[in-house]
Image 1 (cartoon, rainbow, N blue to C red):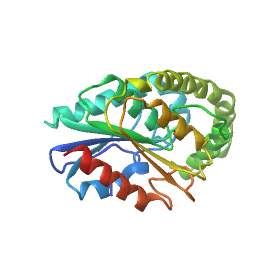
Image 2 (tube, rainbow, N blue to C red):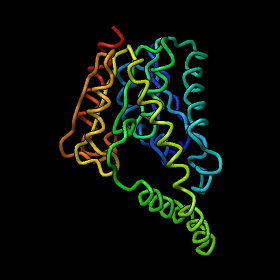
Image 3 (cartoon, helix red, strand yellow):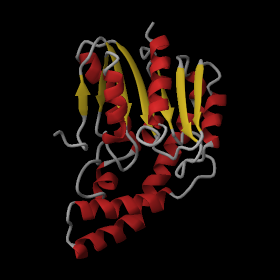
Length: 248
């Protein structure tokens, strides 16, 4: 079985889709969605963002940055082009949605895309810091890290993660400012019980997409990760309908 922390590529027809995962996670976030879309004859590529998917969450800070993840995004689009696929859309969940939006702002060859539970526009939000620390500890435990080493690394992460979060926030502010540049159809999916991103931010993204045909969807009881939680089947149906029109 393929590791959920690796990039994956499902080749299935001439219509390509890039799917970008969330912060401190991996392509497993979008694997369920990818399998559903693959069955509808789409070719899917989900890259692993730099610094993610290792036994040590410190790698996210030491190797990753918004600039590197933006390069990963551009590389993912080029990966599909290199496979001979020229009809490409791009979607991302959470952090991935920021880079999907930036790609649509900068690459007029993309046919469309969207964001899922993404903090592109910042409103009051819940503590990403605390969630990150919980995930880091769980990851160290999963990989059976020595307890003393784990505690030292967790202390370092606790002291340093806010610097990276500030960089992400500044980067996303620039993406938010450029949303009017998007002139392709755009899909927004948002869980209304999102514990990470303020759901109201999705409406602000919608309102700033003044030159785009926006398909806006709320999932009333769903928490942050709508690609895998109670909303996933409705999201898959909504996104499939959007894509059918997009690739007409």
